[in-house]
Length: 416
Ligand SMILES: [Fe+2]
Image (cartoon, rainbow, N blue to C red; front, side, top):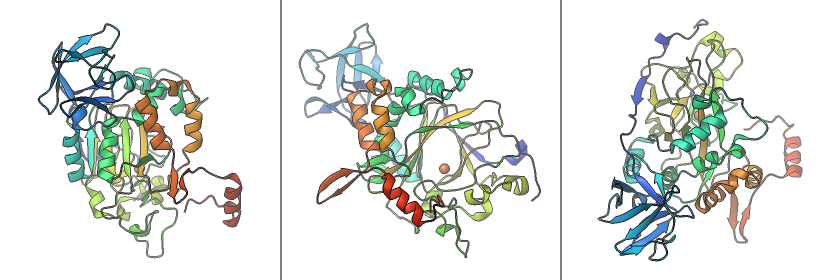
């Protein structure tokens, strides 16, 4: 194939467009950040956002449970909070009868969590459309300097994660966490790296673009080395199919709207079920990573067998990390922002060390803004540990041993 510039006719992917929701459920968020849920004959609180945490408001003074025959009276306290009554009794911060606590009416999902889970299990991906509250979304745009804050100058003095509580709040988004715990069949879910921003600027028709691959920890299609048979399944980090053991879920948060022309991720939806890497003829990440590759060979596969999920800003796309995908090609002059997170079960090693950034984050103002629930989630997500006969021990990197290791490998900095 000769060198070519990208023209619109090259992009033939099937578009899967999710509609902007016409309504959302609500959460009733206690002062500690936990969710009000039915418990026995009464109420209680929970850190889990499954169907029990889902409510809706049929009218100003009433809130009804999303799946139980349960209704509460709600009074606006004039300061952004609400107080609740169950029958004649006020509800305290633990959901029990007592002095009325100040609850927050939280922006909930479009669908019940169990509906998302059913779709996720059946398809290997799911979109939680517009699940972020607008104030959180705008904060992410501000840190990214995109969309409503496109004119702002990017602050590179500290990591985006430390710049605003919106990054951690998004990492602690409760429905996506519940879904991932269910899909990976473990409560021990961690961040494989500290959340950061992925900003995609306008394509210039020449520069290399990302090729097809599976995400961490599989990394099929993007290994630094290919064996003599050049078979894609031996590419990457996980040497065999993993079957029912789900070793990773990618959580892509759309900060900018994801559109085909604006650089939305391209997928082969459902390809996780093949449990092997993408075909080399689609143009894999390892091939497209070579200097000058695009100039010589053109773009990776962008035909009708591929899919683009178009979703509004504030949506979260979860996909089984085995799913073949590649970064989109941004044909607009607007930068596209996303917050991408490789999520793993606790028994996997992370992609990057999160311990130092967790400790640094705890010293920031952004940490102070979080609720107790959100802080607890961040601790669970970011402290990786070993658990053995001597109990639990948090793990981190070791400078002395790193030096020895690198010296023994001739310090190639190879990840493989
Ligand atoms: Fe990826």
